[in-house]
Amino acid sequence: MTNVVDPADTEHRFRRNGQDLRVRVAELDADGERGHLLLFGAVADGCLVRVHSRCLYGEALRSQDCDCGPELDKALDLIQAAGSGVLVYLEQEGRGAGLIAKALGYRESERSGADTFTSYEALGYPADGRTYVATARALAGLGLRSVQLLTNNPAKVEALRQAGLLVTPVPLRTRALSERAREYLEAKRTRRKHWIPTDSPPWASDEHNEDHGGRPYAVDAVGLAPGDNVRPRPGHAPDLIGA
Ligand SMILES: [Zn+2]
Image (tube, rainbow, N blue to C red; front, top):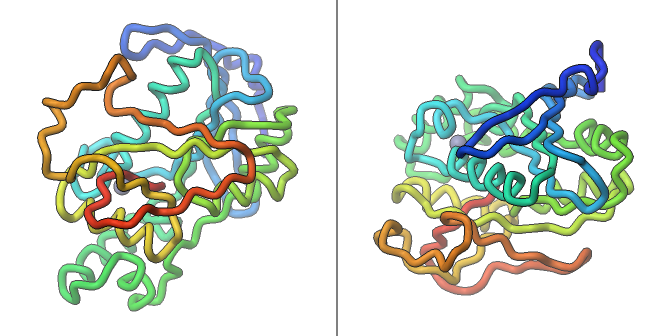
């Protein structure tokens, strides 16, 4: 991590959904990983951590072809509800290959019908070129020994564990916004071993009619003990997201 500014000197009020939190910002730029750490509230052992890769389409443009935007929203919802946590926002558009590669991948999938990972490989890109080594080191550098990691991606869990952190994975659930998004989730599950719970209603059901039972909207995080394995459940039409 290369900090030209002490994160303490960046502290300011951050308002979202009517709730204020203090936030500090640190820059990350090492080992090919670029981005920022946003430290919300009093970051301490066991806090929530989201390691999130940038997605212009899903976040800023609200594309319905993936669930990156809703997933980021839900991670922030949980951090705000907890009163503290860390968001690591990585400039890893297109699974590290960039926006042009993502566009080429979409086009290739439209042409061939193959999933996104196969399309990347057909184009000469790695199926997933992202690493989290510097990210994990930066988190450990905050003095954290244990974290609750908001993710369905075992590669992120492993990277943080390699850095010596005790990691409790907290799977994130969001609803697929389209058939294409559903297919993307299924590809993540089968190709990249993401933990995609499949125990909720079909993706096409009307999410607005669902009773959220007092939980934060559309969030269904499941706490797991460190070392627990979460395996995909049988059945089709996973409507949940990995990252
Ligand atoms: Zn996306």
